[in-house]
Length: 262
Image (cartoon, rainbow, N blue to C red):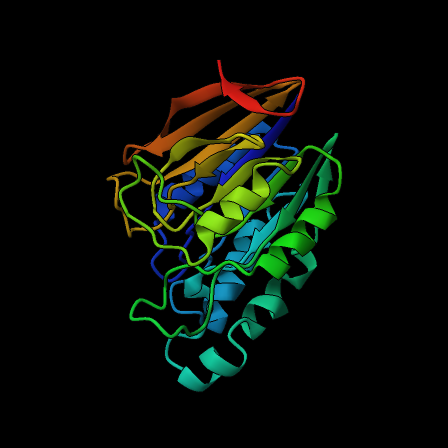
């Protein structure tokens, strides 16, 4: 059995100390095999926010895969945001951006964030097909997990609608690949959506936030359990005092690699 903790939108600078402390204790007790951190580690991309995020994640002695989000660019420095938007992220997390193997599974990261875009909402995601192919090559023939910040397609029950550029194309590229899970954040809510195509299928999972920037009313994170061909996901939601488990669903990977709800 493999357990992966999915975190997103820590937003150090606007973090919720009670939720962060409670999450740290619970995560340690769950004994995860890996952590997937799906972007927006900081609120304004400040150095001290990155340092705080790194310090918090350093307490977990387990493999970690970290990708940036749109908030991980320097908000108040327009020149840096355009010329070198992820230099601070790379300075603090380059050593945790490489693919991670957990049992027979292989996880790779994809940067869906941009420092600037030629559209009104620069915070929206954008997928590079070239970078996606590189991530798929890094996963190879292993059962795969893709980690990014923005969902490819808008989650059905998420508190925020998304418009990820080339997300629909990316979704169709992933479906026939060995990737069975696509982990993301950005929407500040836990959701699970099964995306099925004639060529294959994958499960899209978004995690909530551990910050005060709540959209679904509670801070949360996900615990993903991979047991043989079974996949189960629990969202732990904070009620102000403690985290309570809420099952998002259970799925099974079939003989052809497709994934279906149980």
